[in-house]
Structures are given as C-alpha cells and as structure tokens.
Amino acid sequence: MEHVLFKSEEKKKSIDAAAVMRIIADKLETGEITLSQGGDEVRLSVPETVTLELKVEEETKPGRSGVKKSLEIEIEWVEGESGGSAQPAGNVSIS
Image 1 (cartoon, rainbow, N blue to C red):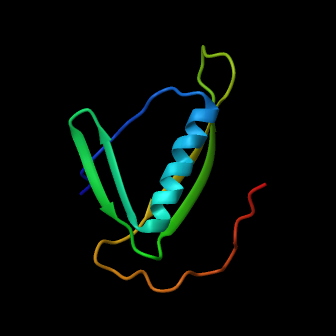
Image 2 (spheres, rainbow, N blue to C red; image 1 turned 30 degrees about the horizontal axis):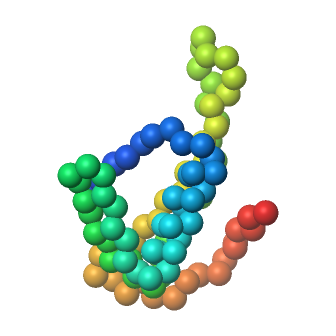
C-alpha cells in the first residue's frame, strides 16, 4: 500500500528547476534530505546505495495542440536495508 508523505507540483522556469535539482543532489550525497512546504515537512535518511529510475514519456490528447513530454527521475530505497553495492550493468550516459 502506498502512502504519500509529501507532494509538491508547481510551474517553474527550467533554470529554477535545475537549481532545485542541484540542491537535492547535494543533499542526496550527504544522505539527509528535508522537504518542507507550508506546514508540511518530511525528513529522509538516504542509504549509500539507491535505485535510480529515469523515464521519458510523451503524451498526445485529442483537442490539445502539441505533445506533452515528461522526464521523470525517481530515487528508491528500502528503509533499513544497507543497499548493497551498486550494479554497473547498463550505465546511462547524460550529455
């Protein structure tokens, strides 16, 4: 069963979205991330090894001009597991 602990969605300039992702990346390296908005706050302890999922989608809807594209970045781990060692199969290249 899934339970959403925190959710935020807002329009931003791409430069501002990049700045948020840089902060998340820096915090991910430390193993501690705190997200807060209004009165909501969630603190995460991130293990050394995580599962990183990258997904690109495109969607067309009748009556909408253009194609909606999305890049989803998901970082997963099981709480209490050490994570083991990273598996190098199929490393992604980003340029």
